[in-house]
Each structure stands twice: as C-alpha cells, then as structure tokens.
Length: 367
Ligand code: UD1
Ligand code: UDP
Image (cartoon, rainbow, N blue to C red):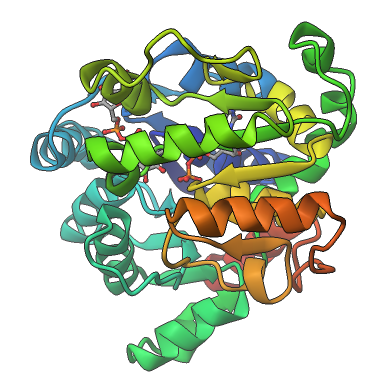
C-alpha cells in the first residue's frame, strides 16, 4: 500500500503546542504516513519558536519559510507565495493546519487553490466578533476545509449552523491538552518558581497580546494599572509578548515607579510556563490557549475579553469573562481571594488522546 504524504503547517507559538502531539502519533504510524513539517516563520524569536521545539521535543521543521512579521496582507501574502512553491513540489495527500493565525489562513488558501485535501484542527470555534483577525481566519479556513476536527461541542453546533456537511466534522477533543498531559511530569521539574522567587499559589500570572487590548494606548494603560493594583494583594508576573512590549514602550506606559510586586518577564518556554500556571492562584489573560490550559488544570482564569470562542471554558471550566473593566476584574480577584470562586470541571474529550483520535479518523478517511 502507498504511504500517504501529510504536511503540517505551523507558524506561531500556539501552533507548535497543537502540532507536537499529532506529529508524534503520525510518526508512530509511519507504516501509513510520511509526515512533513513546514514552519512559516511567523514567530521567529527564540522564546516564541525554537524554545517550543526544544521543550516539546519536536523535530526540526523539514522546511522553514522564514516569512517573519508584517501587516496582515503582507504576512498572509508572503506565506502564500512561499508556500505555493513548496506545496506544488511536494504534492501532499493532505495538508493539516491548526487554530486561527495568519499562517493557518494562508496555508488553507494555498492548499485549496492547489486542490489539495485540507484538514483543520480546532475547527468551528467562533467568537462572533469580526473585529478579531482570528475570527476571519477561522471562518475562511473552515469554509475551505475537507476534514474539520472540533475541540468542543459548540464548534460542532457552529459548523452545523453554517451549513457544513456533518460527514466532514469530527469531534475529537482538544489537542492542546494532549501537549499538556504529555509534558506535565517534565514541567513539574522546572525550577521557574525558584528563579522568580515565587511561592506556590501565592502569585498571579498575567498575559495580554490581543490587538484590541494592546494596540490602543488607553486600554493597555488601564490594564497595566489594573495589574499594578492587583499586585498590592499578590505578586503579578506579566509574561510580555513582543507585540505588547513594543506597545508599552511606544506609549511610554512604565514610569519606573512600579512596585516590586508587578514584574514584567520575557515570554517563558512551554515547560516553565506550564509549571508556573499549574502552581498559580489565578491567571489573567486574553490568550485562547491559556483559557483552555487553566480549565484543564482547574486554575481560576479571568479573560480580558468581552467574548470567547471557547464557551466550554466558561460553562464547564474555570474561566470568567471580565472584559477590560478594571472594577469587574478587581472585584472578581477579591472574590477569589476570599475563597469564593466557581467550581469547575474538564470538558468532554479533553483527555490527552485527541491526536490519536485524529489519526484514527485520517486512517478511516484516507487509507
Ligand atoms: C499571532 C496571531 C494570534 C496568536 C498569537 C500567538 C495572527 C493574526 N495573530 O499574534 O492569533 O494569538 O500570534 O502568540 O496570526 N514579533 C516579534 N517576534 C516574533 C514574532 C512577532 O518581535 O517572533 C513582533 C513583531 O513586531 C510583530 C508583532 O510581534 O509585528 C506581532 O506578531 P504577529 O505574528 O503578526 O502577531 P501576534 O500578535 O504574535
Ligand atoms: N505560553 C508560554 N509562555 C508564555 C505564554 C504562553 O509557553 O509566556 C504558552 C501557553 O501555555 C499556551 C500557548 O503559549 O500553550 C498560548 O499561546 P498564545 O497565548 O501566544 O496564543 P493564543 O492561544 O492566544 O492564540
């Protein structure tokens, strides 16, 4: 029997976390599949890219497009130009894309125009907010995909409402949780708490990188002041994405009067950050992946957005949507510190076996 050539395309920090478990299971099934990894280069700093390949024990990408940063059109267009050449040469049997970043959209457009079969991991999620660039990437990618792997029930419902044929949609669970489960034991050996002089459950993590929160000087100022306020109660460790770092500098938001309790750190590697999350009192974030990881870990999470494409993290999990109103954020923190926070659970199929379920579907559909 001929082996099938499967190309996975990744470009950003959360993409690496989603593709690592699938690469592992595909390579275990090398009797059936030849697996090729393409990195677009959307994220290129060591601590957003190479460190994740190291921590997740991922093989070096077979092909690196080196596209880098730019406006949406520039970045998407550059990835398309470079990727088209590669996919025309490779002629894969299937292209797999992950999540909702520009690399996902660009790859979906190129693959479908070359009439290559396309699978989308993390399909069907919707924030119903088209001002979010990721929402546009998700809608277009799902529309073009032949196989749609869904992480939570709401995704299935959204796709059904959009008229996607049921036969193309597979509820397989959350692949980010596969990475979490696979790496939890190793992550516990990280000495990040010692390095940052933190005591378990006596600190709060904050992250923010959504354009709606950081590209507007007023909103970012409100958020930073809110984190500083909260740090009077417990230390706040602010993992600072490069987009956010640039904006903080551009808007001149740090005046040197920060108390030692509000600490800005460079983005951490996957294992350090997993350990840090697992021992935190609370995470305050606008990240999608972190809403999911805190849910699995049962760590309270405040989301700095007005909506989420991940309703299971709120309905079942430990997530609370607070938007950017500092009163709402601080009152939720106070409730939590008084011991009043909702009990949470883990959504269906978030169990560490999603990559295996995906590969079983691929065998059924393609072999
Ligand atoms: C991208 C995704 C977002 C995802 C996030 C994960 C899109 C539209 N956005 O946002 O959905 O949540 O990744 O972290 O795809 N930069 C660096 N070094 C790098 C990469 C970026 O300094 O290695 C800086 C550049 O100035 C760049 C800016 O960060 O312009 C934004 O990077 P970009 O990849 O365009 O978007 P993110 O904000 O990272
Ligand atoms: N992450 C990390 N170090 C950090 C911040 C985040 O390892 O300092 C991990 C996090 O655990 C999750 C992923 O990065 O696995 C989420 O990526 P990000 O928040 O950049 O993107 P999103 O999920 O919002 O698209």
